[in-house]
Image (cartoon, rainbow, N blue to C red; front, top):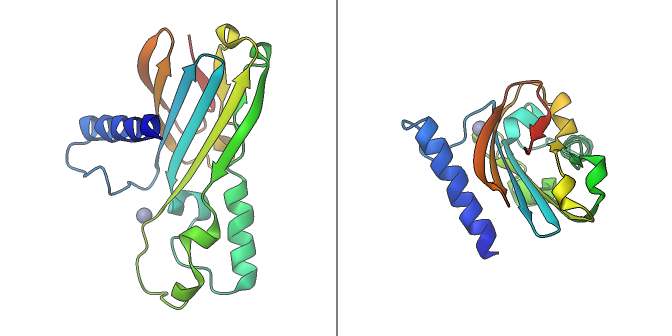
Length: 173
Ligand SMILES: [Zn+2]
């Protein structure tokens, strides 16, 4: 948990450095953040994007059918693909769901501009972490308008890179 807090602040710092006019808390539509952390045999990939870019709206779902559509869309933020030769297995996954984004009690608050983020995190256990050459965020093909700022915390050191819209592959070497 402590590590996660550190990551969050690193992401915030990176965004501030790139865009001093925008406070870290206010997201920018079209801009996502990701972090790749390799520590021992564990690989953690975290991702955060504005809800607008994932759902095409930040309005609450109008009915039960819309809630299902939203949930299906959120599930398309699917697990990344580490390079196969590292032999990684997904061990833990979290993703923001509709119930968290839009609690039932706020369903009728349609006019309220509701800036929110979708967050996901995946942890893999890798047999050969030294053979990790890249991680591919395949779902960025679906959300092809997003630019993604990526922070790397690797055994070899720290780094940062940017995936242009349509790019999916995060090189780790
Ligand atoms: Zn927004």
